[in-house]
Amino acid sequence: MNKPKALIQSKTGICNRQSRISATAFTLVELLVVIAIIALLMAILMPALKRAKELGKRAVCFGNCRQLILAWGMYADENDEKIVNGAAGFSDRDMAWGDHRDELAWVDALPPEWDTVLQGLKDGALWPYLRNVDVYRCPTGRPGEGLTYSIMFSMNAVCHPEVQGVKGAHVKNRSKIHSPAPGLRLVFIDEGRMTPDAFAVHFKTEKWWDDPPVRHGDGTNVAFADGHAEYWKWKATETIKEGRARENAPPKKWTPTTAEGKDDLHRMQTGCWGKLGY
Image 1 (tube, rainbow, N blue to C red):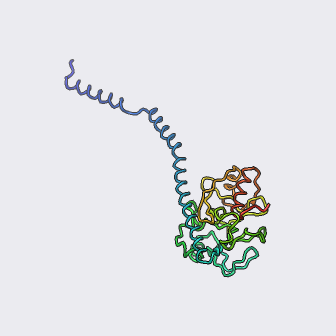
Image 2: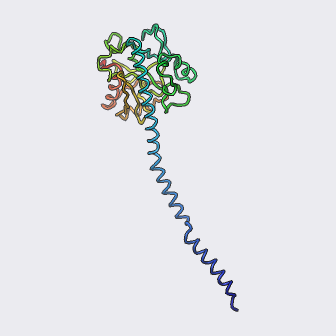
Image 3: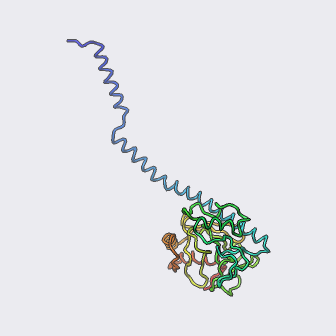
């Protein structure tokens, strides 16, 4: 029996459409290949995106250091070259490790509690020169950290027994910063995990006191007495390793064992005190 011509054409059309669909659809293998390529591209791009994000945060932190050191300089300008009290939370105190009588601390509270520090910033000696809470905290700061920057021991903060009587080491007046030049003397450091009052550095001992900050690409931002800021990246693997290990723990006070590790420590000690005491 001959089939109707219309039926034959209908079946033929269905077959043609099925053939076209089969020709354009992805097979399971092809889909898996596409997914694998996307995953590979993500694996390549994610580290780059992460680095770009970190660079952005580092740039903001660097800008914070610049604003802090400018405020620090303006305070000295208006106070006959006297340097602001760098021991956070220690206003108007005469301590064995530093005479701060009649001196308001740059931050009038001990970190790291946010509510306490927030009021301490506004009550501190630098607030009239820098009225922006966000500048006192690095973008990489953890929740609850209201202050991530410290002033160095040497800059009218803590006059440690190791440097008492050492000329030019612990400074209370900007005009006394001679050796080395102000452009080599550290004032601010993005410490990250904020210690009680200031960033501690040994003078007579070849060991770390407070640990090296490593939040920013295994380095940190610092600011100097002449008003400029720098990014410091640590050279030694042991410096970075110890910095990471101690980021959320009390200082270990460890001694470097490699030449590069010692260079990192010497750089920090010289930047703080102006010279090595050993």
